[in-house]
Image (cartoon, rainbow, N blue to C red):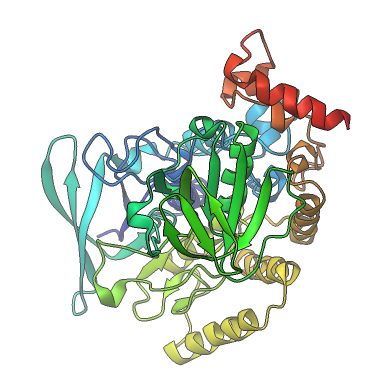
Length: 468
């Protein structure tokens, strides 16, 4: 009987696993019987975004945390697939910081070309997983949401590729229950238009706070205040943005900060991160970790230390994204196909500890980029995934971080050269600060006569600032 492989989630990581097996099949290998379960009606995970918050049309928790007007906050040249380039997909150079719909089109194009959709059961959510140690089999209970049927499937290997940016971490603050304005987590943020003319407080100091804050500025917020727990982000913010230490309590609309200052706000957005949470897994199979570059209990960041038949993809904090998921998927595939023999448990534990010790000593963001570059390099060296210039990608990450420090509002207007093809990105037809239409059509075809009149005041304000 052929090996049976179950994959939970058809976001970028699950798509990478499907593509890895298809690559082996195209080269003449016998591949397992594969079934991938995806609770949404289409693949793409986070990139398959929706206006919905809370519950989706099937009554399931909304997966995606993405929002309207979300543009890539890192160069596309850092996430480009080694076996499917942006040049191949779009047929011409595009800018280095595309909006969400453009990247969704790109990742969908690769798997559509690979003919792997036949392996995916859409509108099917994993409810529970159990493992029979004697039989070495996983039993996966799923619900077919479209037909309202519960099914049971048995697998020899199981891949968990649902990501870890869907279950909000929601801290409590004294007095926030009676805050009279809007309070939401970044997971439920779907656009900043409604904050035009408002005073906005964002609690958190990472990527979501940075991006939502600057989108709110772009959409005309009167002021943006970032409240940090440990250290400020320290960017050269526009005049209407400021950083304050952590909120200690709320009194009505007034937020009190730990440095004794206060502020009056119309809305609060909790940019406080996400939890590793896998409600379909029993405790002994469930990863528990903070959002770090190398979670414990995963050999090579992929194979579950306590059960070598279980694999996690995309469980790390990420500099690399799509191409790192590929490297992980190719590694998991080759372990499943018997091309890579896992060492003894004690040797795996020692390898994990070496990475954890190195992670604990990382002094800054540059060293974090170096760390993940070395991690991806090691994975690629173990498989037939196409090699590419990882050092150039790492240098680009470092340049990107410096670009943000220099110009937090303008770094997305910069262009970079593809590591895969050598193609220089095209400069986008509209500056990011002026780009009010993030659709694929507008991005590719250029501006027309459809300027959003609701944003004319914002455009005028930006023009005045640029002239200074």
